Amino acid sequence: MPQTGRSGCPINLTLEQLGDRWSLIVIRDVMFGNRRSYGELLEQSEEGIASNILADRLKRLTASDLLTRRADPKHRQKGIYSLTEASIQLVPLLAHMAAWGRRHTQPSEELSVRAELLEKGGPPLWNAFMAELRHLHLDAPRPRRSVFGELQAAYEKACARRAL
Image 1 (tube, rainbow, N blue to C red):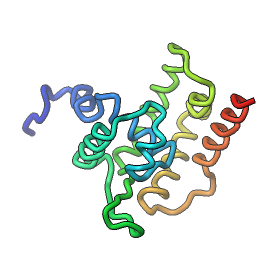
Image 2: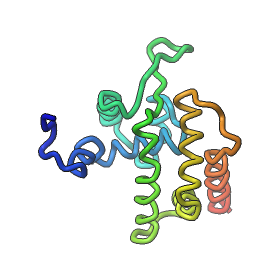
Image 3: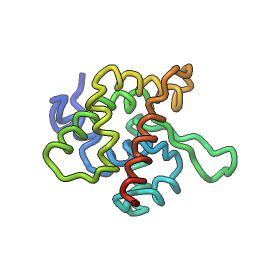
């Protein structure tokens, strides 16, 4: 098979697709925040992504088959982004990255509560979350358990505690 990156190393090839911080942040926001449109991704960005950077990353992630874009039935010029199977399979990687970040950085409680739940739940929770993401993004059957709902409820509870 011809080499498509700087080297055929799988770590290198993964980093060439996901290696800049904004690509993973966009995937995180679609995955954990269910932000599906350009406007939601831009307006609700905790990190304050610039509009030109967001537009570029959405194009790159779509070209790399990590996101798909379909027309918004309510507005022809807008698009709705969905995760692909390849990006859904990033759940374990993101869970490990978040767990590492909780141990070695000083994250906020509200932005790390999902990471804590994913770390404690381990592979069984990750698999249940991936099944739900497949339902939300790939039209797979709805699973009985809503991990997304559990993660969102924990996040909202942490935000409420912070507001007090």
